[in-house]
Amino acid sequence: MTDRDIELFKSLYQRFNARDLPAILKVLHPDVMWANGMDGGHVHGHAGVRDYWTRQWAMIDPRVEPAGFATLPDGATKVEVHQTVRDLNGNILSDKAVRHVFQIEDGLVRRFDIG
Image (tube, rainbow, N blue to C red; front, side, top):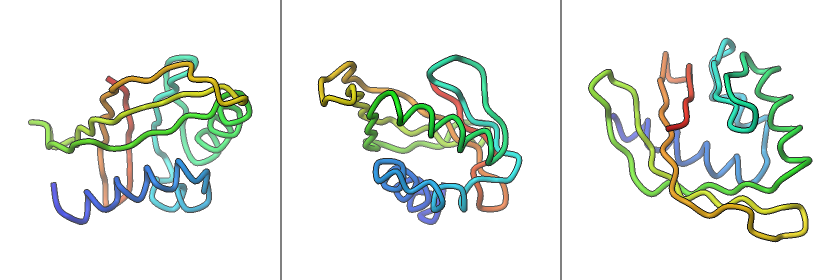
């Protein structure tokens, strides 16, 4: 994992927390495969990610802060995050550590998995 990769991930989490969807989509591969943490499975492509997060943010207020990065044997990147999920009134629904796994292709996120 390079410093450039770490900066990509840090920026991705910052943009997610700021709800800056256009900036996020710029670092996702056009055919990205993204884990659907609400319903299971994956969403695909920019339109799938856009629809998923737009729906998610209308129901809950998730925040994620990266706490550590590691390269896995297959070359993927594991990011340990602190995730806090609140309802839209600010009440905490979940507060826990979560593992995210990313695969990068040509400097873009190609795949994202949870766990």
